[in-house]
Image (cartoon, rainbow, N blue to C red; front, side, top):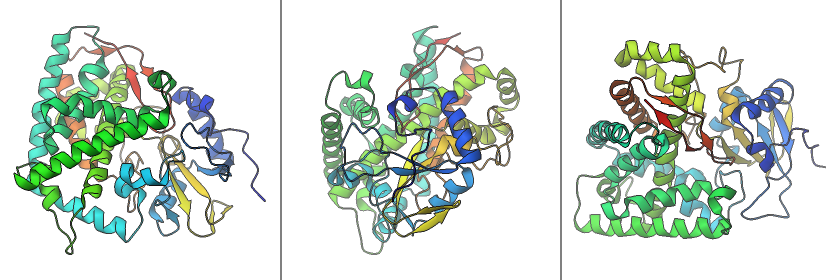
Length: 413
């Protein structure tokens, strides 16, 4: 016998077409009254499954952390996206995000070994230089320019290109393909196209780019991450071509959206909370560390990830059965008033700040968190220095249940 569907339907497209403020009202009710609740299958535009009975929604911070850290019970190998994704696309697009130990452990170790201290320093130097150029170009574009087009989306793109050595001729198309992999649920973006075809064709293109890069770096290794990646070895294991291609897709998507969306939401928040902007500007170097964590909490750029229960498990009084889906709602966890005082306010001095913007901990904690933090430090430093009077208008959002995405946002100064 299935649990009863909750009166708040987190599976509907209508719910995800509302604003973050509207969604938070629903999350607040669930946290207070039904923190682990049952919902019907998501309105699936990819692959409807007649066997899909629904999912458990986890909305409290403490429960999100518990699910995240108990990877023996809550598995990722059946997929981590809200929607049902064809099995053959899972690892090809989600890499070790959609794996469980022991394979996850080994591949993550191999990838991590490529992030040597030297690589990290090189990446950080590149980020600083790119951020300076990007804000200069935004200024040259003139007041009224789209902040997303000229600023938010540029730093992740250039960082990725520098990290792996993407040729100049491919950079724009790689960025467009990464956008497609998180925008296929948006009717405006699709413009009548088949969402599965959009997903598959763009994933195939990214695979082609990755395999060409891998072959070239094996022949002519350079001083970039991809060269380190194709040579990295742990316990006698190296990444295969399919594993390298899948990781490239993950890097293109995950390396894009956390920074891109947090930059947009963070800039809007600085305009809405002028006192916090003044506070940060007064001692940028001393305060940006905590500020970055607050920007990520406030933005919650990744909104959902799911797991599948390996065994029966009781979570916050609800009996979850083996095989049932469990979806974590990160914006809800990041606005949990039992953990965060006045979560609706931007507080750049918030400390401690145990947000779940990079995940709730455990084996799947974001591998690129340090790169995202370096990007956010650099871009906000340049924005406050080069355009101290910058203001942004109202954002236009991309509908969807995965990424809290800003489509466009005018900037004035």
